[in-house]
Image 1 (cartoon, rainbow, N blue to C red):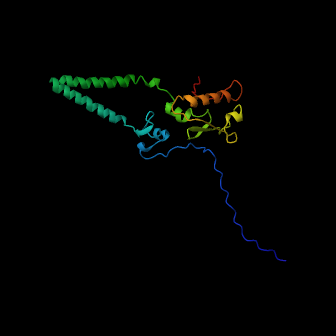
Image 2 (cartoon, helix red, strand yellow):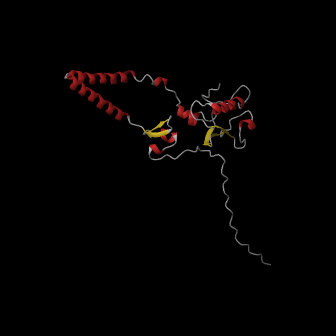
Image 3 (cartoon, helix red, strand yellow):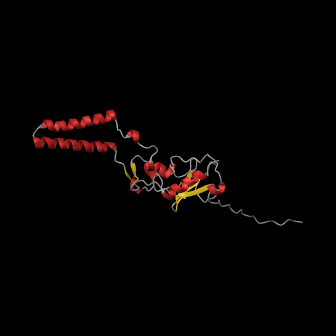
Length: 212
């Protein structure tokens, strides 16, 4: 008795199930021109570009040597004009000498504002450092909400209260519009930090989140 020959069966390819929230941050592509970049990370990652926090745009950063050349042209112009108006060449030379002394003093004593700069920057805290609890990642910003994911399984007090999706270990907060945060963006983050600590008396860490 012969066995029937079964026709070949092609296996159905298994389609991967997309994750509801991408792990990698959703950022705009980095264009070749600074003026076309809409993301602070792309702008600050390039020395020739400068991010304007108030205007929320990216533009070309003028190199320091350009400023120096412009300043020297202005100083020489003022010196020549002083000489022309007064007829005293020494006054024109004095203008140049005063500017040289100023440059030397600035080089020796440095910029007094350097010691008072805030580290990390407000831009870093607004877009990266302060968006989510410490050791969580900022997955994406969508529809006015910041999506945070506990990828390292940091302990929280209550899965139901501390996650929007306890299976995916994700939580959303109102988008931070500036640093320090205010309104609901600050209120909901402070409530989460207060109620979602690993155990009583130990709150979840959230660097530089100043709650009232």
